[in-house]
Amino acid sequence: MQQLRREIYKFSSLSNFQYSENGADKGVSVRNKAQLVSDLLNSEEQLMRERTEAYEYRRKFYPGSGPSMQQAGLNGSDPSYG
Image (tube, rainbow, N blue to C red):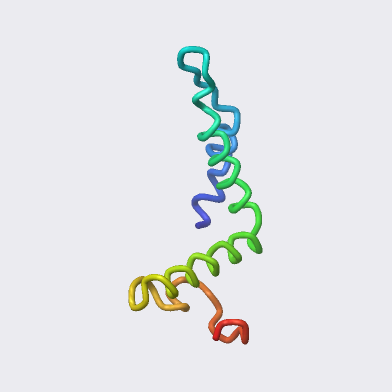
């Protein structure tokens, strides 16, 4: 994770990505995803919310698969996990 944060400029530069095909802007999805990744790397709180949401989704729809709460980097002592 720290390596990604050190290289956040690579994601930030993709926020200005331009590509068009037949007059249509085809780069919008790259710009949007680059912005989302940059936002996650800049906000520890948002990253933890997204991780928690993904963990809960996986636990609900795919029980027994994926990492444990601790392996996923989530705090299992939080009373809202239960």
